[in-house]
Image (cartoon, rainbow, N blue to C red):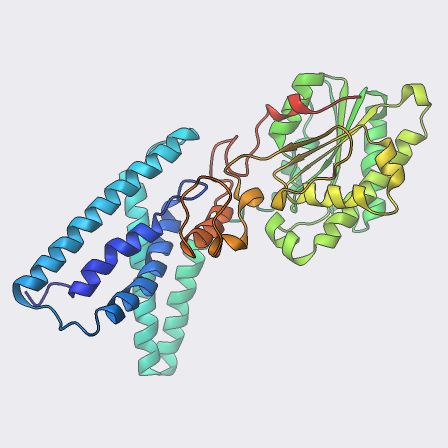
Length: 393
């Protein structure tokens, strides 16, 4: 009987499991569930023990009953969580949870707990080598389970605009390897656009990329399926960091890059005979949408606003827009980049989604990390159907 867990522990586990698997915008990723389970236990267990403090510690049959009740509640909460998560996954076209997913979540939790216990033991011993070992264990745990960024920096050679179009459309791109100067890089992009005949097409799309310089290949494919060879797409890299990092550390750099490209493109379009000018469209996704909007709304950007035919923003952080004519905004209902906000920690959302104070805010942060680990059309991923909504003049 002494090998049984304390009653408070047995009763805290289902509460922590419920908090770790509470439904949010997106289906929970197994690694995230493991991390959240450990965090929840760290918060819930002390609370339960504090509440139960005045109560004498249970022993004998009472302890056995409490442990059995905790086990039954844990099984029920786990089954409810799996059912809820599978329903969410089915709605967006993801496969049901597997045994591997469950083992991944439990393994993550076990590794974090083990790392934490190792760090605590090493710190108590306070020897030089034990502290080093604790640091190594902690580093391995963090590096193993640190989430991949939503849009990792891809090599420039992988960018879709450097690959030939299957329908004869024009694609032009300039990366940071071409020049470190925004203006010079914008000129290179437009020179390549001009040399490929892009200024002769009826539709010219300026794609403001994400932080790493990524341009959505699905959107480019949709554009070329809609307009065929009569469309040209031009873009320019302004950073090598993922969008979330560039957004936090150098948002102005993204705006400056977007403005340099728009200035260069509009100058090239304005230099053409009026009857031969293409319709100019500006498209931005994620940080690219934020940068494009800021560039167009600048006080000295009236010539840009007059030249641009239409704008299209996909997954704008915070849901921003410009209010310009022929503007289109795409935002998936479960896109945390658009809909999640820090206030969810204390204030319910204005939707019918379930909400718990603090818990929903933490899950929103986890959703942001996993916003691209879903099929197209969900989360922060937008598919090749979107270009059909692009407005023309």
